[in-house]
Length: 399
Image (cartoon, rainbow, N blue to C red; front, side, top):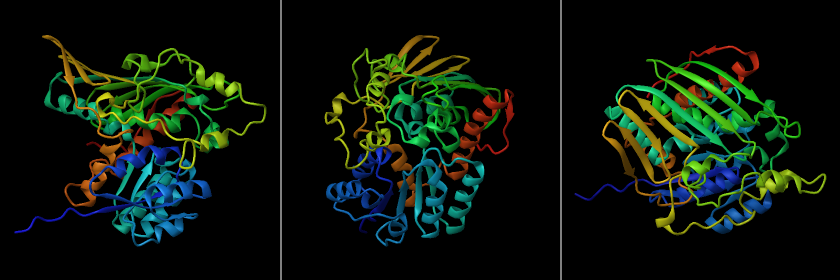
């Protein structure tokens, strides 16, 4: 009897900026994924996409969604457009991968879930760092009882986030800018995965420390889980301390980086001429912009990460490293090596989960309801910081 051929998953990409540029290699290297179409209002981005992938590129997302050669739409547009574009894709019968954050409000998340369920299409959100191989292994060990009952999850990340070139709305919290909307979804999704998913309450504080970048650039939050475990997450994007130091100077995407770059993004930004257009510089990270650094040697690739993640149980600790995990137990320290990524940047875990569901091999583990629960926590972080009180949650789901 002949073997059943695995189906092809044809992907269309709406938004050809920096996020798409990072995701495309993981689509391109999957054996059963075809990059079928792109859409972006910028002509140079469309031309670059068509040249690189030999696929059509449209000026309008409606044209991509009406394309019969597309099965799945990956949405990498500005945050405030996620609901509109997800609903558009669902109504066209396309499965959906949407970049984080899922949306700016829970009402928007509800509309996206409703549209996907009505159309009977899959919906997943790109919290890609919760798919990083060391985090997945960490969860497996927790579930197996390697450190006993879980007590504490700690994730902290210090970066130059606020001083990378930004569009106007990226520096306005009310428009979906700032660290909470942009960075907390990664941290929250990681700790929810490790903690079982259901956060009962959130208490937080946030800070906007630079009047020239008038949005939240740092926050700290305490999350109480159902069952008694807690998580503490800390983030600062002010380009002073760099927590990649604790990953042996391996950056967020798994790239090697020199030490001593602290403050360099801030200094580069301050050196721009008065009135310089940051949005034009930001666009250089996308298709049609500056070439991305090459990391062609698989042996030199380390794992991507989102800061330092440490979990504590009754019988030990687990810490994520650039090459895997460290297990601190009653018998001492054990290094757990995990084979390095096959692609750079490695976002293949997210692609694999969508493909497996698309091909009918297994249901989505982290669907739109899961992503909405992550967004509920992020919005609670903002609300708690504004109101100075603990926020109780009501829309959490487990895993």
